[in-house]
Amino acid sequence: MDPSKLDPRAIGTLKAIMEALRAPVTGCPWDIEQTFETIAPYTIEEAYEVADAIQRKNFADLCEELGDLLLQVIYHAQMAREAGKFEFEDVVEAINRKMIRRHPHVFGDARARTAKRAKGSWERMKAAELKDKQSQHNDTEHNGVLNGVPAALPALMRASKLQRKAARVGFDWPRPQPVLDKVKEEVGEIEAALPNANRAEITEEIGDVLFAVTNLARHLDIDAEHALRCANDKFVSRFESIEMALHRRGSSPEEASLDDMEELWQAAKKRTEDVPPDPT
Picture (cartoon, one colour):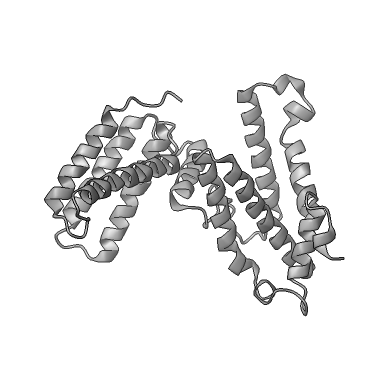
């Protein structure tokens, strides 16, 4: 059946479209040759575009980006179906069962209906599931505390998750101050290494600083990924102010001196610092 004749609001229509795109003879040549590995980067990219739309509070874009992300789920499920691994309905069943299992305070024990207890229940269920999965693995595999943190996560996010997992078993500083001291120590190691270090050594030291700063953010209950996104946005805003100011002068960043751009940067910085913070 031609998917264009089906209900555009039905999930079955999207499944039919993907099946048609992947059809060996009549499908799209590009879609046919894709694999889990080649599609995975697009899946990650679409998730970030969802986050970007949310940050911009653009709900029209959010609606579209959620559709793009849903397409990724359908895409992977179709490839799995072709390989005889699982169906889209198996994906739906798995998440439905997981959500019911991890929310006994909603679908079972009414006594657990507080945010704190709910989070604790989720973590206990998650830990029990991980333990069960680990018990099914080959005995030669290492089933450690840090298992289950995907290596493909953005580096800041993965660092934070690794630190939280280690903290749950007591491997953590008790307060933020020692973590701040560690940040200073790591910065000092970069400074000491700069005169003679090679690229590999500097890379390692920079990584240690970033890991320590992420740990400090965690101790202060700050999302390091969000903090860096805000810093990126601030940099873009201030640099665009430089470009506009230079344009008014009939100049550009390529033509301006560093001193000129630094002066404009400081002016842009002062303007943003004078704006009271958004209480929301």
